[in-house]
Image (tube, rainbow, N blue to C red; front, side, top):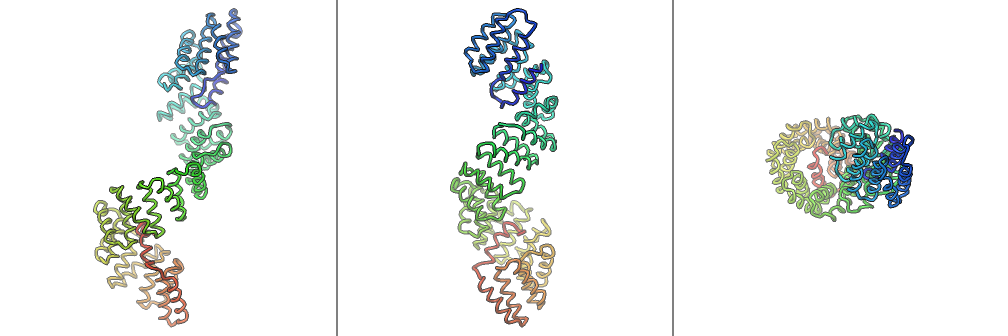
Length: 533
């Protein structure tokens, strides 16, 4: 039975769905026609020639030799098996199955015929006929690798991973020598939470040669999705070196690097994927998201522009494009894209909310208020919506209503930066400077790097004649945001009050040089998108 085991191990190295293992022919010959058969030498010689001819690909001549052995009862069963193998290689699957069934009927112990017939049924897409035969094979040879692999794969495909591993365990070393065996084991280990065992399979995969790239990608995805990201990257990088570059390889390598938070390499991989398929929406979108996350807003915008040219009516693309335009203060570009996106997805609150941010940036406060009030009506327990509506109401001068929504936002999400900041502005505008100072001092205890709070607090402290504290806060505001016109201007006024005229003149000149139209309002839409910014 050593020949059988060797043949089956060779078979497992073949990708699923390819030809029958030609070594079955040798098994038939050695086992059934060896010493102990006292007659039919001509028939045995014919089968030997048939086996040799099959291995040489000379199928018609092999067919003739196999038929010579049909007349001898001692060799008839094996001859049918050989003919079944020949028909398979000729892609005449129905005839192959018929001949193999005849061989088994004549000799139920023909292990190779069982395996061959099961493979035929597998390729025909008839697992309900193949699997019982594989189980029968295990009654003939409990350690047959091919049968155990087929049964383990079938159980895994049904989601029965524990049963799959039970079939695989007796031949585990053999399965680790083949790509299809490793794929089944990887699926089992991943689903059963055997994380260390799954990661260790990467070492076995590294020792394989000539594995198709798509198999390596599939294996790497199993590793990555289970958390073995470094091993997945190693498999993909090795595949990149040993196979032809492709979109799938570059795209999945980008995903793996993204999971490892190596974002520059992820972007490089997505760019490479786009050289193979410039119209790939998944690659464009993933690259755009990563570039935005990395603060490369112009690069993110370039991906969204390409995507928008390909699918100009895709609401998700329009939203992504509009959001980046919004962050770059390109309000005239953001507005039409976000308006169209909201019309295409009227039930999705995210689209209306982002459009409201754009309208706020354009000072179209009534439109923004209408959009936000509609959202708050249906989502009263959303702290960000309550915050946004409160901020817009403040800009419209509706201070009492603004305060009500801002307090509700804080009730739903305490220790929130945005709502506290605007509550301080409401208190200031209601001539309650002491309350505004109290709120801002509390905000800065928790968020010491919030430039706008330092700026407003510094101004209020200057009015309260607390010059030292005012100077410290205004200087901190400028350190955090050197281009702030208001902070530079207020510091200039403060220095003048303190009698430091020369320093004051320089500071006021700096403020004049930095002055830009609507500097404060142009930054408001960012806080609407994320209250913690």
